[in-house]
Length: 364
Image (tube, rainbow, N blue to C red; front, side, top):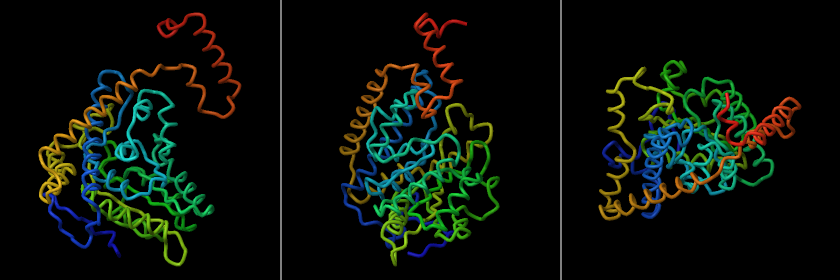
């Protein structure tokens, strides 16, 4: 399908009504209900994570509430062995690939949480803005050279498009035709900077023209539209015309309901009225309305889903909380071979632990 990067692709409106039958993806009832369950699970996990962060049980957390439609819809469009590289807010992508205690362990400070993601073809999350985009293109290029027909989908925010890494990755992907899907979650704010301070372009999707790839602008609060455009993009990457893989830039226009992170106060830079307007487009209530209207969801099934996800999240919190911290592990993952200065610090640290035990952390 040909898309206009200035137009917003939609399947559902704010009331959950189908507005474009031609764009409606052919999905089974089971898959549609599964998408809804995963959206609900993502929202509930988000809420519980913020709660336990306030209790001091995990570190700074980036809420993704409001962006579940983009995350779940796009991930359902992938094959299980397609690679996902995400920034730090796309918890829904991990939910689709099976949310377990390992993911929460990362937020509790255990590197084992990152390691557990690799088995799910999810690259460890990236804190430095846009640094993972060149990595994604490199992974996609490797897939192309190996002929394994995997697509690589990389998630990032609108603020990342102001970084050099974004432009370098887009240029490389366009020149070498890598099977990369660039998925920009444009939630309107890069921390406290509005999107109009990030770019002079009319849209982010239109930037694709400069790099010789297709740009698509989609309603990020509409999971079915996000599924449809991502499905087409990965097929373009994996099974292209005339044997050439092609990258795609998708701009999902969405919104984060909460703070940038638990260390942020969004009331300083945005109005409550703006938030309320976007909450009327909530992807969860929109998709729920669609499922109920089409007879795929009722009160009994909805209650069953809610009870199941509450039990699931409670179980992984309990499991992750039982993991013992290993202070020595802070030296294990930064370098393949520890530099002499850090080796000296490591030995001093271990000596202190040996002499004082847990009291070493209480000494001035």
